[in-house]
Image (cartoon, rainbow, N blue to C red; front, side, top):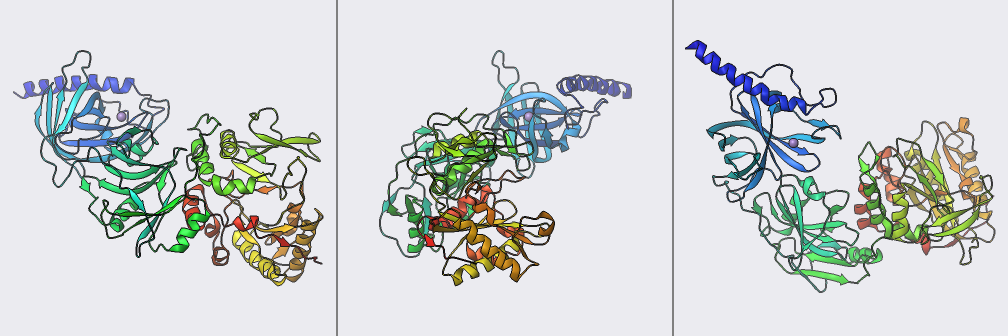
Length: 629
Ligand SMILES: [Mn+2]
């Protein structure tokens, strides 16, 4: 009797090791972090399961049930069906070793199953039926709970293809609606007590995310293309979103109609907004539309100033299907599709944050409206990182060899350069920004003067105080010096506007008119020397590395017409995608640690929605420089 049982067990074991053979054959234990056990599997309790979310070439969920000492596995492209009536494809894959119950990790690209794998759920299950054609189990996990039926399809040539259904009612779950239409806002005046949501003038769409796939439909129910990454980002959470889709492919999400088995449309807007804010909805091409709970005319004025087309007023206590009011409706021609082609969009340019070239493009498109006026008519020096910020970079001024014909260029003298002059690019539209992004020109630098209508050089129209923290000091020390500069300038009736450099320091800008080009350098140099004389332990006005330690260098030489400074809203080629970001004087005064004055590309949309372009006075507030020193 005992011998017979042992024989049967050995037979079982032999089958199992054959099954793991395929598992081992597909993997190289030296290259994958996955468990690749050497020995034969031992029979276990046959009641454990794991479901892994696998971001491989295509997102899928791997359902693995412990059976005869191994994990019988199915790859389910859309995950477990949430409720009865939903039938999902499940592809039987090779048996996995028991050790895989606990596996999560990054399988290197190029290896079998390359991509990240996380444990979506794990727990125990009971077997109700298990044969070659049908498997019925009751799962008792945290997320996977219920009776699931796997049925093998009989179709010829598809021996691994199974169908997966949930057979018991899912408690308290409502199915994701098949079709929904966006609530339309009607023009009107601002109602009292409403919340204001910024509108971007895009096409209204409903986004249906189910099983990690996003489907976009317009107001008529017609299918449209939207960003593909949103589905995988939301994973297994079924959701119905209301959003605006811009011609650039950017998606601004404004409302939620259904979330994870729950109809959210009847909830008041304040609750729907709170649910939205709890979802992972900040991606390279999608973000939450900014909302101002205490919206008033000032918000509307700020939105108008930024050139954004509309504001939608929503009653915070009303359901989704209620009267929305479009407060201002100024139409703006949609930006033309960009002429610049994006090559290698998935190339990672910032390895630390995983920021790709298409993320860089998305940043430049998002800031285009506020950035382009700061670039207009200024010859651009690009700094390019073709292989990302951890590899080498190079400066590029002359683009005559490769710039497309629609990029305007300007010939500018380059004393001390390889040649006497160079054809610098002028970036005056979205296409130009997209072209630069495609060259991995993360940094765009500009001088303090503009090119004239016939290629002549105007005298400087900006004064820059470039505050460079010496060793042992930070941007916080620069902020303190900036406040003092502001006090000195105020004594002369002048106002300067602050900005972070996106690197270690910061700058102050003053819009001016001058008659001689040297005037701006002279002015800043005189003030820097005055401050260095007042507080020699804090401020230095000469370019001397050794003496800079512990002090802030006021680099007046940046006003030299041959010098450039980083353009406002430009990224920096540093470990993180930091941005040269205009700030308020309140932020400068409140800064106590470097992070207070550090912003990355993720921070910009919300800042722009709140402040617009804080440096827009540079175009209107021109001041006359008094004589100093
Ligand atoms: Mn897989």
